[in-house]
Structures are given as C-alpha cells and as structure tokens.
Image (cartoon, rainbow, N blue to C red; front, side, top):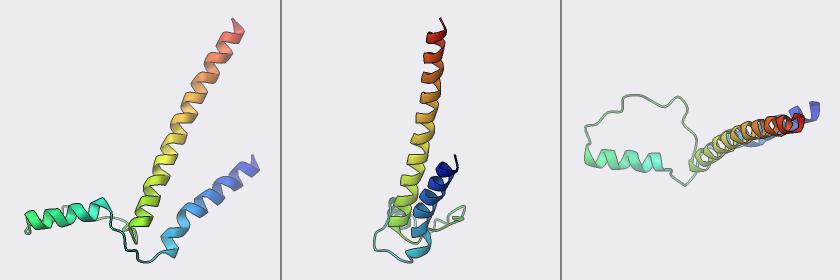
Length: 94
C-alpha cells in the first residue's frame, strides 16, 4: 500500500511540474480563440467572472485537461470493476 501512495505522489508531481516550469508558451487554446471572437463581435462585452487560476500556456492547459480526463476514466473504470467483482462473487456463491 505504501508503494501505491508513493507512485500516486510521483504521478502528481510529474503532472504538476509543468505548472511551475513553463512560464510562457506559443500555443493558444480554444478559450483564447473564443475570447478573441467575442471581442470581435461585441467589443463592449465585459466578462462576468475572472479565472481563479490562469495557466501559463496552452500546453499546460492541455496537460490539465488530460489529467482531468485520466482521473475521470480511472474513477469510471474503478466503479465498473467494483460492480463486476460484486457480480462475480455473487455468481460464485450461488
């Protein structure tokens, strides 16, 4: 169990490192392009809220999205595995 915790911590450090290492990047995400389009269509528009955290670049934004997708897939896979295991155990008891 201690090894799993160490591996999880290492994965978190690897995923979070670009947030602190990359300061500026050349790629723009879809949010930036959407903001440009809105400013072109309605220049007087003011955003309702401000971002809590602004990633330093598109690569970091992509990384965060990928990590979020991987966590979600892991949770879904875990839940499917739990139900499959319960079903198998129920079948063995009968």
